[in-house]
View 1 (cartoon, rainbow, N blue to C red):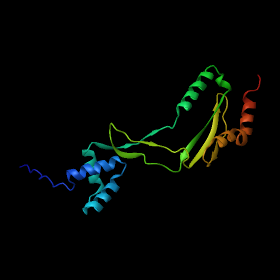
View 2 (cartoon, rainbow, N blue to C red):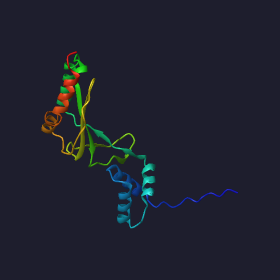
View 3 (cartoon, rainbow, N blue to C red):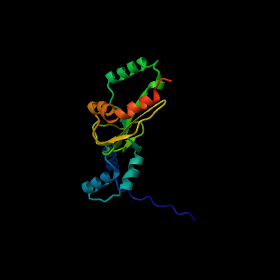
Length: 178
């Protein structure tokens, strides 16, 4: 004998589901939506129920895409530099760069439709811990850690002030005439 489960009465009406989906598209999380639903209607609903509603509405909790802030001028200058450096002797080049560990973060996931991904612009001046170093064909520098927000002045001072001796020693030992 097969027992069919009776269809349970929905806790959330179709109109409320639509409202919840609209609010989720604005970046609200399921816990916040459940809390607001309870405040608005006086009914308690679990965040998992809200998540099921959003999935039925074809929303998925996906990572928010980040978009780099490059102007057309930045792009043009990068292409120009690439053309200028096409025939460089790369064995005598020291590449330096920094890695930033973000201390303040933005939301990385949000409820969104699969074809309509959310984007978020990242501020350039968020607090970070930076690690700076360099590497070349024959050499490498020591790592340097700093906490200040990177700006043009600091970026230009790192090779001159902080690692001048390291770069000089590395260059002298590697680029001696043989």
